[in-house]
Length: 141
Image 1 (cartoon, rainbow, N blue to C red):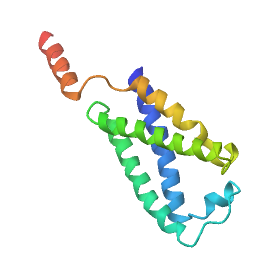
Image 2 (spheres, rainbow, N blue to C red; image 1 turned 180 degrees about the vertical axis):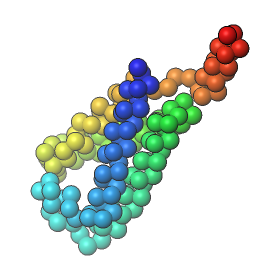
Image 3 (spheres, rainbow, N blue to C red; image 1 turned 90 degrees about the vertical axis):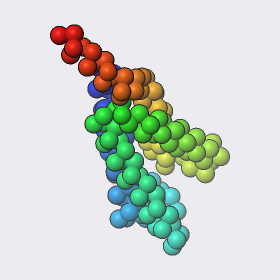
């Protein structure tokens, strides 16, 4: 059950990363307009394009981890860190009054949901340990 929850969480994270990665690559000015922020500076699409490459890279990491969570535990651990940084940065801007909770949308709460789900479902054993256990069980049969 834990592995299923982990895989679902990784899939949802991959979907968020893919959505924002594609949005910021093909229409970087759309998001600020959607949430009522000032129009972006002329140079902003450049930084959004750089972010999109990283977001799409995270999608690949999450897909790897979905397929083999034990082998790609490092991707899961990195994503916990990414989500923590996302939430902290978001809350700093909200607390300073620069952004509202409505403007930050899901960034105000989803990182916490992701962190808790990933931490609780984190694969505790290394892939090698799992393979040894499976081989021992097969030999016992």
